[in-house]
Length: 315
Image 1 (cartoon, rainbow, N blue to C red):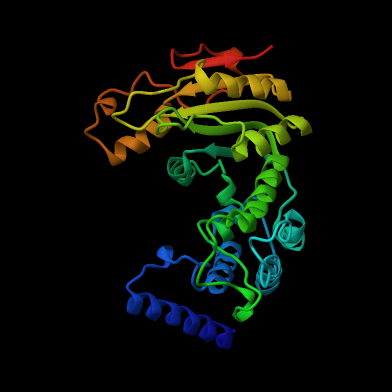
Image 2: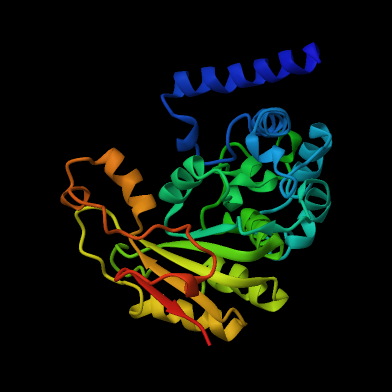
């Protein structure tokens, strides 16, 4: 529709002009992401029409983008972000009823914790694995910020989302999206974590989305029978944690306690090392990669020997 497109362009131009005049970039704003409505409408159309994920039956979606925006904005618009229990998972029910797929993602679900960029770089080249941000809900909301205001135009606060309670708005959204991805996971699932985290940060945490939502959900539903734990390390850094140690060992224990008995752990696999070396080709870790393990291989670990970088846990 030409009129809708012109309105979207006009709104986007307004925010672009505002950012130039104020000397601020959109991601530096304290409030909701500028032009969030136009971004979501555009992402919705893009996902439906040209994103390769929509060719996968497990991720396929056919929706009315205007209704998607309406249900999303109604979840938080004109609501007090800092008022307890005003925005909950139930607030997003109408949105996820429209936007979520219920089909199984067999051997294709990749969860991540502390490895946002490398996980997405990996799925960009490994086209048969998908992260939360590759699903329709995750793709729409990725890196966006939103909050409501009772007295703001359209009920959306573009000036300030109170940092002390901003998660009250987006938290229920990502909690639901994470759980739905875990519910759809089937067969072999993958999780990518970091062995070179910063100070006071661990490779695995029970309070992360993966630890408190995704892993327990997979265990409860019993559709995932094998979990591959991928430990990725930044080049030039000494790993703090490896397979069989620290919280990586704890993750394996939690997976088994949840009912996923077949767990494989791989340290710095060749697949991700290639990606890192493409960025930093002069790193010493890139000198020789001929003996490094890969993430995707024979599904049955009984058919091959494990490499020194891999540990297999099962009953």
